[in-house]
Picture 1 (cartoon, helix red, strand yellow):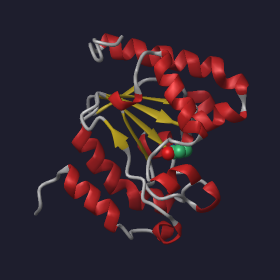
Picture 2 (cartoon, protein in one colour; picture 1 turned 90 degrees about the vertical axis):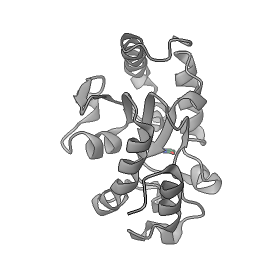
Picture 3 (cartoon, helix red, strand yellow; picture 1 turned 60 degrees about the vertical axis):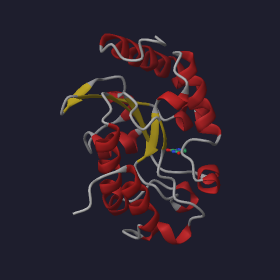
Picture 4 (tube, helix red, strand yellow; picture 1 turned 120 degrees about the horizontal axis):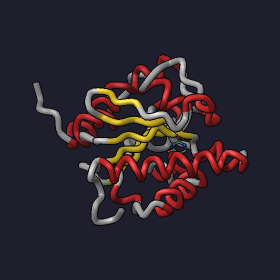
Length: 192
Ligand code: URA
């Protein structure tokens, strides 16, 4: 069997037809950033701008995400950013369970290659498919869980913050908690 590598990952995503989403897109959006980042961020799925550019979190939500990371002194190039599904769902709908399941092999390979110490789950979809299908983001955000040695925390999706400013203080508390966790683990010591 071919050895797992970034090259294999990119090829596998490019050729993927495991669910019907590929038929409607302009570009696959595998994810990008530091390939060995200690911190990985997982969102839901590409939106329109992401689909146009083939890059994760480059639209309005992505710009907010970049500002959120800089608020805790993390340049986004130093983290790895990706999504549960690599193809844009039509009309930005939530990915169907079969679509998220079909795409899981890509996220698995990606996580194996990056080997992050900490994962920030952006929104309910990311948290449900990664941690627990019963997660409610308003109830469970900000809570740390350790899985196979990796620390994970769900927080609001930046799009939710754009829609509802009143969530920002909680999102800020989660960011502080993220910074504290990274510091506690001795990560990003040149920045934090
Ligand atoms: N929302 C997401 O979940 N992911 C993106 O890449 C962009 C918007």
